[in-house]
Image (cartoon, rainbow, N blue to C red; front, side):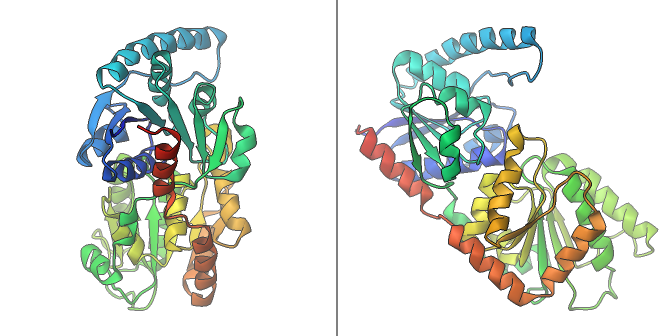
Length: 379
């Protein structure tokens, strides 16, 4: 008989998209897969769009300071875990696959109260708080980076599998992408991705690059062009910023033809197909896609994450020559723009970075997870 598996966790693309990649692999083998997460966050929108039955779970983020707040959190977590236990039981779950994010904890702990086993996937070098907590009741922890093993508490078994990637990121072609975005397939292109939540600092760098490179109808036909996916949070603000800056510079209020700005892209395969270089944060899910595709990157790790884990992710790519890393604190925007312009003019350097990235790519991670689940938890 097939399993009934609950994907649990979310909040950001770094949790949600690996979860869906694993869920897709498991569904393809006949297992019944549902998604337990927070209705108001990314998973609440994307999982139903991908055909998953979605169940909303109540959860609260762990407070970083204040003893009283932490005590209240602990009591609240016990209460929500008990409540979620009822949802787990009602669905007849036989396994929980947790992917991180504070919303994961009530489902994993609620399942543990029923004796339902859990498997946890950690996408980053430094495990998140929810994963460190839930590892104490999990049967198996799956890792993206080998160095994470020593940072997982308890004696739970740890297995290195990589970060699951949706194989659809391979589907795009440059010609189709150029038509989709109104860009020239022959010109070098910088893809800028702010992530599922957007990134204000990356938007600042994007604006500076656009002002330097995209000069309107008379800009020429050989310089770099930009595809900017802002994330919904900042899209209106970024568009207005571009228009105001171009107008002030005397270029005109309309965006030049070498700049395409999108709020969200559900066909990232085409965005990647258009890219010669990517500028982005350093979430594990994004980096795994870049490596699977062999895309060179300039990374500005988010400092607003647990234990600065994005910089750890980024330095791993930098060490092998797949990426250039700029730290957000004290970032010299013009220096970053100049470095990207130089890279886009050096095909040999980009090719070397591409090969280094491709050596880290792990397209089969989702299938490996499905193999492990079926082997360790026969239905």
